[in-house]
Image (cartoon, rainbow, N blue to C red; front, top):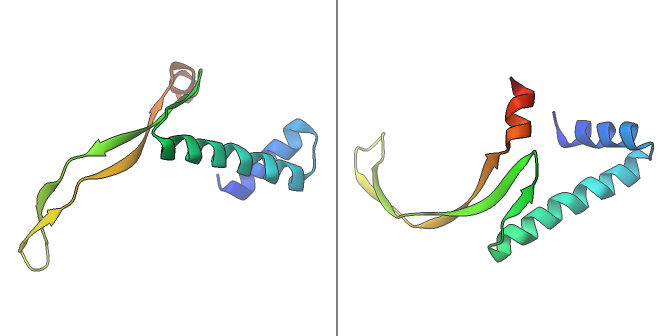
Length: 90
């Protein structure tokens, strides 16, 4: 499912226009991004939790040159699915 498909789905189920659904979907995604940027968790009960994890620096190998490389530490987004989402996939 693409973002366009999601907007169409929201528009159909909420009986609103695609333009209004697009604004709503963008607002939800923007809210999640802003919360993660501040370091907060976003919990959607029954769906899952979005959070930020810290990845340690590490040493890797460039497969083409076989030379060792240092990968710096960084923050990465993380999603943990909730029970409701897990059960609906089964």
